[in-house]
Length: 403
Image (cartoon, rainbow, N blue to C red; front, side, top):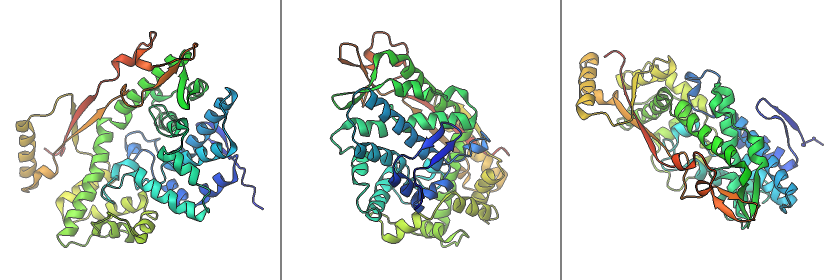
């Protein structure tokens, strides 16, 4: 018999325990193993060379933090059964199983409006059939259908173990220390009141530090102008490939990527759609971009060379939208330099918006010593919560360096 109660050595959290055999079985499943070939942060390693970690790393880390959080809650007198513990760990382990190549970057580009969470549920249900219903409660928790709400809040909320892991992990691999949150301190402050996840009021500054760390990581890392541009280029490349294919061109690529570029309808995915999706990973897209650098289409070859050779277009960032005349000037210069008429394909204005803390949707609740709860932004000793609940938007304009 195989010993399934393994210990995994993780560079971020140290030793990670697998306390239930079903967790090992899910990790061994081909759907989960595919996450080894899905980048956690898209093309971020082109800007931060150390950011080569995968969704596989992140899922294991989030599972570990879920176990730690549940152990903390049990020590505080919260009743959690073995079945609930196992299911919560399964839910967070599988929460990203529906991610496609390069994670968020190409979401909706391959299967239309199929968000990764929608695909995750679809794949979870298929795996549940394989494991004879052992994942049913985990799927309930993931979808927020289980009556004890704090389980879903630990999986997906403004303060969940998913965010705690990716912030600490991405900070570690990018080398950006501003995102290095104290996960153990935050988890030690977690509590449950009326089946809702709350934070002991004395942990308020750890929570504010978490929120500001997340804000800095978004603007300094995820929404860094070159990071945002690299992600946008991936979308542009696949979009351009689809246009050329619709015009009758045959672009070289892997069999599975070829399938998705040629098919347009995914309202009700077939067995073949799902099977082919679970065989797709970053490698398919990288291989295609390498082929397409030699495409006769100037736009496609230019975009692919920008990524493969890391020769990105020039980008400038602003807190205000760029004027139409400024953009038009860039387009005209692009047309002139490349001797083309569709220069707007190489000149792009993109935007990135962030709301660091949403005080109206699932606000973070603090548990006071008298047993009452209060939302974070209403706490008397809060320092930053009232100033980070406004939407902030940055605009990025990219255009060929040659002009």
